[in-house]
Amino acid sequence: MRGSKLMLVNYMCMVLISITLFLHLATHAFLGVSGYGASLEPDAVKGHYTDTATAFMLAVLLVVLAFHSIFSFKTTLLEWRHGKTWTKAVNWGAIVVAAVMVAFGMWTIVAAYITRW
Image 1 (cartoon, rainbow, N blue to C red):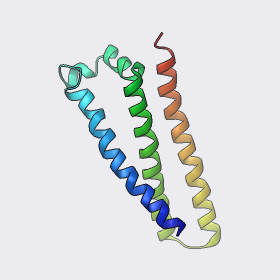
Image 2: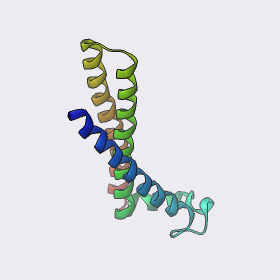
Image 3: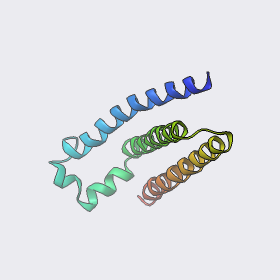
């Protein structure tokens, strides 16, 4: 039963990825900028991190992408090999890798957001 709940969360993450990725790409393509090239200018990039709504969207995108990718990779590894020790190592490894990914990503977002003033 626990596995099916995690799979449901994974499906919800896919929906959230689609929505936030569309919004992220839209901010680089046509929302508030004159084109993709203009969105990559240093001031525009800093603006993406210092705007509250955009920073929140980037944080949500980071978390759902981390969960979705690590969960999918974990599932692949568990299907590749079986065993109690292997399962425990993969599960703990997935938790550690996900925590590191989110910590480094959030550190970047928070550091850029705090230095906006």
